[in-house]
Image 1 (tube, one colour):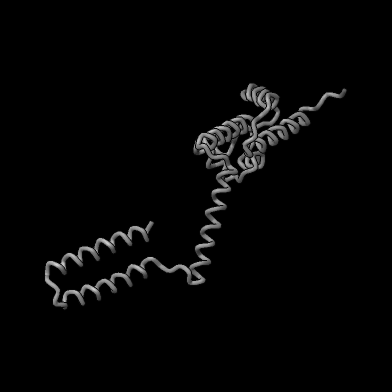
Image 2: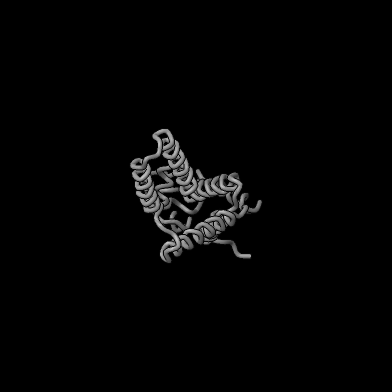
Length: 191
């Protein structure tokens, strides 16, 4: 069997790294073989790994993100850089995969799977659209409008009671009952 040239080996390694990043970014668990590959690439990190030094655009293309995202991750310490705009591709991919695994583990620790979170989001979105449609159809109205109308109504009732010939003590009892009822109604309305 023919030996691979250094350039061919570097191209294959770059493709393997890209595949590992894609797999890792969707939350799939890496196989032992893939982890061994990353470890072997990491052990060549200080040496000439055949991939050379990459710029921001090359790393972004490898990771499937934008150059801006690479720079943000570099500032945040997720992706190590050699110098301004210069990256070791092996260290970059390895660190990014580690970060993705941590993100996945943290999300798993929340008790919600991505599917469950998406389902919950879809249900809330459906609920919001239903409420917006009901409001447009006139089935729902603004709480502030209701509260304003209630305040005007209670003011009118209060004026009628004040101007009546009911005993003052009885008037206070009526006002207290109206206030208590109004507060209870507002609490129920705002829940």
